[in-house]
Length: 182
Picture 1 (cartoon, rainbow, N blue to C red):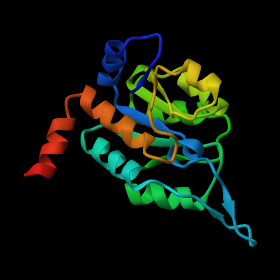
Picture 2 (tube, rainbow, N blue to C red):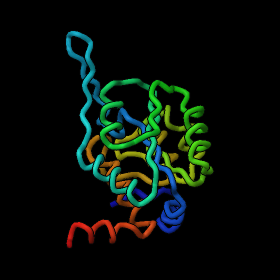
Picture 3 (cartoon, rainbow, N blue to C red):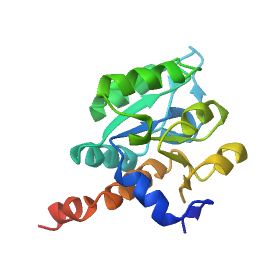
Picture 4 (cartoon, rainbow, N blue to C red):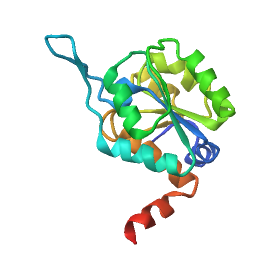
């Protein structure tokens, strides 16, 4: 069951219909938030394959995807490149500058964007977008301020859940599904 916040599911669906951009945090959203380092200081992250496929499907429907992360990682750059995500902003603890830049590049307004986050660094964007989404294991302050919360936790399919919801709200999910049933 999806956690419904004070706004109704109808209102959340209406917000999702307007979306032209989904902005994702990395650690705790695209990953489970765990950071792995080897003895040489190399960093490793784990990404869920279903999240990646959901991102590709969402982009095919015309919704752009951007990543804004407070940390910087080569593994993130490689994964986003493999998914075809062009708008990747790493090392932005103050995420507002990157947010404003991507909105300007895409010529969209904040209400046409969604942000998916898990921690306090995400709140400045979550309070400015048309639809704010928290992963199931988000910090309580993020969870309380989100319009919608996923069933799944970060790094475990939560992004796919959000992509599917947006595609359903915009009337694209059945077309995507039917392409696999042919």
